[in-house]
Amino acid sequence: MEVKDKFIKRYEEGYMPWAHENADFNLIEMVQNWPIKVCKTAEIGCGTGTDAIWLASQKFNTVAIDSSDIVIDIAKKHAKKVKSKCRFDVCDFMNDKIEGAPFDFVFDRGFFHSFEKLIDRKIIAERVSKTLSEKGLWLSLIGSSDDLPRRKGEGPPQRSALDILKAVEPYFKILSLSASYFGSESERPAKIWVCLMRKRDDK
Ligand SMILES: C[S@@+](CC[C@H](N)C(=O)[O-])C[C@H]1O[C@@H](n2cnc3c(N)ncnc32)[C@H](O)[C@@H]1O
Image (cartoon, rainbow, N blue to C red; front, top):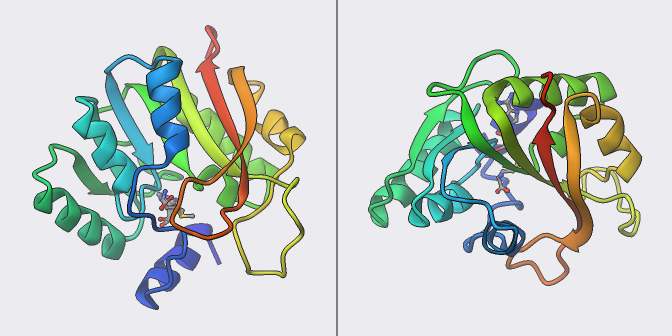
């Protein structure tokens, strides 16, 4: 079963433990402290849209995509409630181009890490690089293998720093890779990698 189909099934069952009500503090801190200047932005695998709506509230011209129409409907309802200018589209990132590309900044929280095979993560890195403008930035929040081992199916996938490097290094320069935990309402948020990358000049 393809990754997108697993998520479509989960959303049909109403199972979405990754959903969060407040924008992830790792995104907020990176945007404010790096700083990442207001620009044309895309979120990949946006889920219920919390982080994309926050980006739009900070004046980022934001498009957010997900392959599940159920979750995009939820995100659109959230956006309407808070009068957000964020655009939400159903789009399969592994096969389709995001309308409006290129973007200057791409964000994902738990999309890249959802792919088990290195070859798929390499394809994602290449596709993100093609989605970005020259010198574009990619911020990815990725479940960390330095967290306690969990039972299969529990908690986010866990990736090592090497798993990340092997996939992204050909397409991106790593600007910052730090250990953190997911910003969420959970009592014991999972450990993550916060990885900020810049597209390589020749990609
Ligand atoms: C772990 S969830 C994270 C959702 C959201 N970013 C969050 O943190 O709440 C991963 C998301 O990636 C989406 N996804 C999986 N495969 C996809 C694909 N091929 N194209 C676009 N989105 C995809 C899923 O539908 C799901 O919403």
